[in-house]
Length: 83
Length: 410
Image (cartoon, rainbow over all chains, first blue to last red; front, top):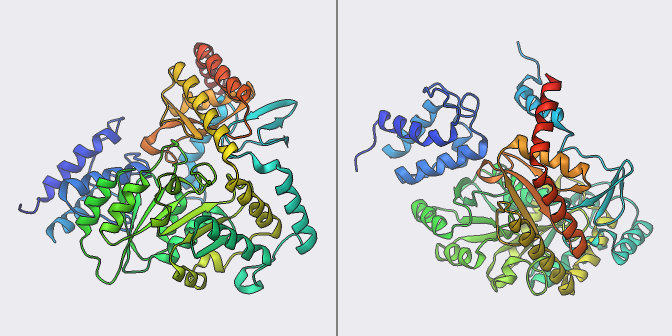
């Protein structure tokens, strides 16, 4: 399987964020996952597990604590899927 | 420019909202604690059903006598850590008693339950190790992993197959080991881990299994060792941690291991080395409670009967309960506002339970959480059920009360 593109990953993250975004807040790459989209810390880790399973990668918790925005999450997944 | 506390504005807004509809559920002040199951606020007696006092030993005559004697014999405090001020005979005696209870060669006691996991996990996992933790792991397990330089991976709650998948995905850990961390009974939902299956998966991948039996030591297993004993795999678990502040009715914690080499971690665990050791009275009360647990089949039988009674009673009232009967029974509520309003109503009607809200709960759920005690009588549990029934029948009144309080606060 070829590595997913940046926009594939962004679309997937937007899709996975839907259940955690009941207020339907607009999702941008610059959106803070916790600060703007109001996703709580436990839900962020649930979202991470879904991404791990979709792309068959491991995103360790210490990496997640440095990720604040949707764009940073896209970049992290892109880096891990390119390895 | 922002002020230091501005970052807490959203949290303050949430608390302000709770205060508009009642009192602070996370800051309850009791004027008196009368017994293991009764407290007093003002002139109201409150039935305590949220204090994790599973075996009801806080007022046990022998535990109290031991604590008092320890104060008379060795004073009120240790004034420092065991590294600096030395170990008291009480510490050693309790470590030996717990090691003996688990049939393990090593046990270390700590000053609180929270510090136990902080210390043990940070002492066990090095830079090259990988921690695999259950998705619903307690804050002290998460914080313990943050004290390490080990990589940490979460797996789906109570799901050994998911752990298996993640261990496979990780592959060989070069120069390190996998440390799998689970709990026996989970504190919020009261659900039980399939420890026997986790033992199989963990050891098949060459990892070590660490189980936190904070809520299950004393309450499960033929001699009260916990879920691992209940499921017949006690001798296969690598590390067992627990607390003194639940069934043992004191303050402190322990970690036991089947690996004698665990003793070396006394020299590296910062939350063990750089904090004062537990007081002689705390340790002595817990020491007597260990014996009460070993011979406490009758306490566990009563606890089990009360759990079945409460679970059946609340189920008959159509409450959405989070797990099968266990000493923790949690009812899922539609949202934080409703749960907070109901929590206040229960307090006003003489029943103390826990209000549990996100992010401290799994699945972003808002809960009314009850923890039962062997000291609860059949009548006590019937009172809890009757009060929940009355609460359900008063739903309209409770909600309109909430609306008018919110409007009055506008």
